[in-house]
Image 1 (tube, rainbow, N blue to C red):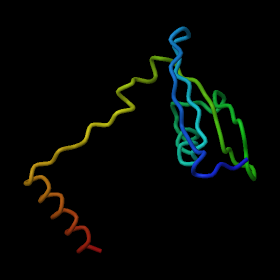
Image 2 (image 1 turned 180 degrees about the horizontal axis):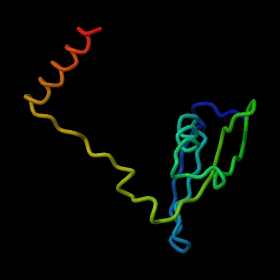
Image 3 (image 1 turned 60 degrees about the vertical axis):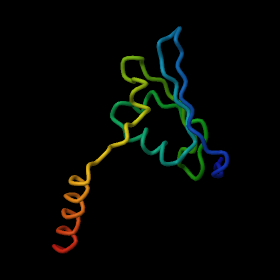
Image 4 (image 1 turned 30 degrees about the vertical axis):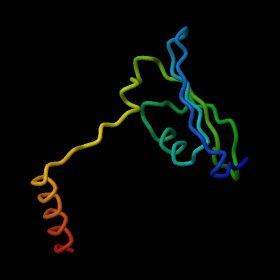
Length: 98
C-alpha cells in the first residue's frame, strides 16, 4: 500500500507504564532514516505495509533511556552579523574554487 502526501504521518507516543517510546511512520524519508539508523536495530522494526518490495509504513519501540524529548525540538541558531558575513565569505571561496 502506498500513501499519498495527505495520508503521510509520523506519530511518536510515550508509554509511561512500560517506559518506551513508540514510533509509527508512513513518511518515506522517515522510514529510510529509521531503517538506516544504527540506534534502531532492524529486528525491532515491524514493517506494517509494503509497495513494490519497499516498506511504506513501519512501527518500532525504543527504551526510555535511548530517547529524550529534547531530541524532538531543535534550537534555532542565532548568528551575529559578523558570523553571517564569515559564512557568506566561506561559501564564496568554495564556489570560486570550483
